[in-house]
Length: 347
Image 1 (cartoon, rainbow, N blue to C red):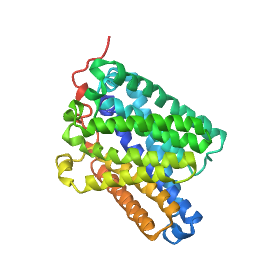
Image 2: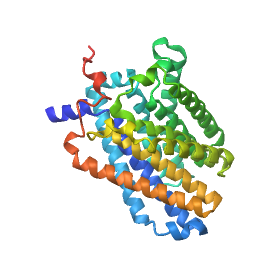
Image 3: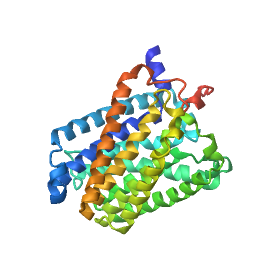
Image 4: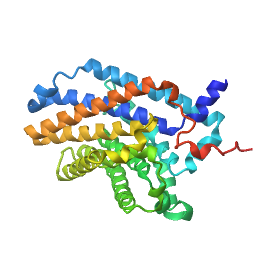
């Protein structure tokens, strides 16, 4: 029981970064395998993506997601004061969106559930509803609560809530619920623009961001990439708006990788925060795949190939590092958890 208690007290919603990356990677492999069958220009490059590998990756994603959800439900039951502390923390609260985003990605990457099935529709709304409830609560606080204004609370992880809206918009569009998809997309894009400007100006909230969590800067790439994919699903075409968002994401990616020194402090010791590298790069690769499908050019295809290989390498490296550092994975000194050290159970 002490060991179980230790796991439940150190585990937090930030660990859903792992299932986010797994779900995104499964979706990438599924997309590439379909591109190899549907597009003549991309067929020679991606036709060899094995369907068995896609299925195994999806099974791993759903296994990890279920395991994390079970552990977090137990945490809610036995240590609810720590969950409440996460909700009140400017970093911890944003990862409360992550479980529902992960489920939506697992659903979208499923090789056995069609997007036009009743099961897909029911599961989508089960996972989207908590995102909407969190939106109303969090965005409402940004508008109305002085101690929780966006200028105080904003940090790079705040973009997780935006990504949640955009992933939900893509899921709704795939079901044919275009009006709901546009609603979620609009909510996500508007808040991304506000967040981007707030963080770009380096207001007070961003100055409190721990150096070890700097991999979360890659979320700047994830949001426009997911917005690009969502708009592509809504309009059923990778048009000008989708291309603009993709190019913004690509520019931000190049800006970050050209300055590796800012990640130096965060790379000294393995931390679950490193998983923040995988998900954004994967969605940039997904956006590039849709771009290559639309443009049908050698440069676009090459870009998709490079970004896809990079995504797989980053994901594989993180898998190996996580397996090699299993004993240090649940770290009591995790900066995301530091806020709960002085919290006492409620009476």
